[in-house]
Length: 177
Image (tube, rainbow, N blue to C red):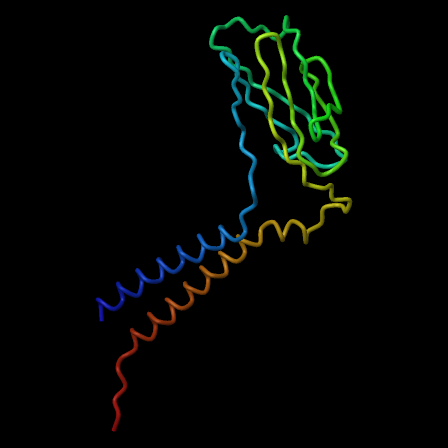
């Protein structure tokens, strides 16, 4: 009986682990990672607000973390340009500074280009998220936490089943006449 209990508990934990991992795979959203682009000795990591996922029709902020292996690049003295291209056509350009903002007009794949005398860096950015015009409500919040709710229900079911099983095992055996 003890051997059966330990096997049952191990199987419960394996099943719980598999269910949770499978549900995370199903509900996972694509993620944009920060990518380091380099050109010879200069490199930069691009960060975009909001959440590295630009929204059509809303202003996005662009921030760069530069690395220069030679130490010669000084952004305050750089004659550098920040440009945005759509289908190879430049749709926006300004000198590179700390105030880089742009509103993407439509869903598309855009190129962000940084160009200076000694470097040129290009990032491909997919803009596919649209603005939600509705105010955020409790139902939107609940839908974002659906995986947590499902996981909690599954764990609760396992706890209840384990308690019932333990109670049944603690009963003395019935005597039949």
